[in-house]
Length: 472
Image 1 (tube, helix red, strand yellow):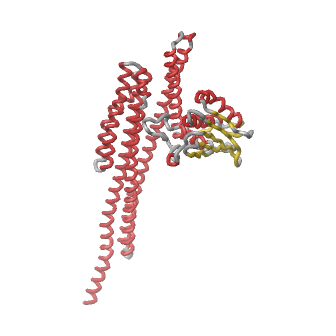
Image 2 (cartoon, one colour; image 1 turned 30 degrees about the horizontal axis):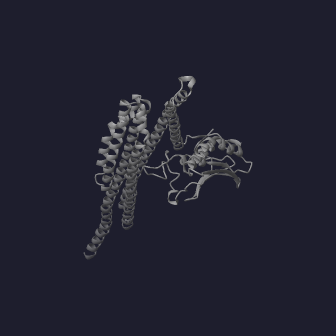
Image 3 (cartoon, helix red, strand yellow; image 1 turned 180 degrees about the horizontal axis):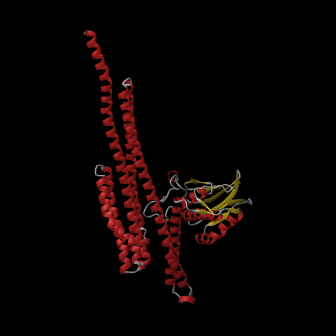
């Protein structure tokens, strides 16, 4: 009787051990999986906040594009992006405020963002009102104050801060999610080891583990699809920006043409001194705007990997002499001593037109920063290890070390103050870097405060290139 009772107890204990083990595994797994699902929901929530931030930035860009386009063309059709943006911005701000209710930092950022948005809309309304009530010149002059650009930069900064905060949270939440998944896996393995003698229980454990794995894989697939959708939206925005930039160039051709006609006495008659000055101002500002639009278009082409290259064999000394010819008028006007110190007779297989574009950006930057009296700019090309190394050297003020790292980033300005003396989109060096790297080379700088700056770029002689971009 005692043996039977003991045997029964052992059977009961042997049966209860795997049951308790799997019961414990099940309870712990239940909480870990729920924790994992909560973490994944927070990750998805973070993506929603980032997506809404991008939508607000795009809407504000539409408002700016519409008001500027209307100021330049006077065509009411140009107001379509503005009207669409005005109708969406309030709901977008309400949406992101609701999404970030639990985050004091983001709520503070939104409190910074709303006055900037209101100020930007007020500025755009003023531009439109000047166009309607005073005329195109008044609207264009209001745009030319760069106040709208300043406001957009501030808006982008705040939105950038918001996205940085969300990316930080995303990293933290991804780490917690990974830990939850790891804890769940460890719990199942430990419980299975204890109850390995019971085939049925082991089978159930394996089945549960497979279920969990399927669930995680499903979540990963959904996140992958969300990521692909975000990439598609980014490409669509880039293509739209490229199209808008291209369309903006069309009216500029007409403006430039009429400005030249106004200066031709045989066409529209003689102008007085003040009128000639006004027409010259229109021409110079038109050229500046065309350059800015071209920079934006080139940056978008590089983002979309659609920039085209036409490589051929050519003489380096011809390219260097061409820089002197192209920029001689500008150098004379600025009273800058511009020299080509190239000594070697070199040949290379590359794209001379794109290299001209690199030189134009680097030389223009140098002209902006050399002293008004006694400014010097030197260009040079030399063979090194089979490649050709170019440089553009100036005797400007130089660039502080702490500001050099950001020079090749989009929209970066060394001087970000409202009183900065040099304009531009901050895309010139980005375009230089993109072209040089697409041609298989590298670009860098050496600078010392008070002694000037030298931009170097190396181009391979064998015509090798980054094949992600288009070669014709």
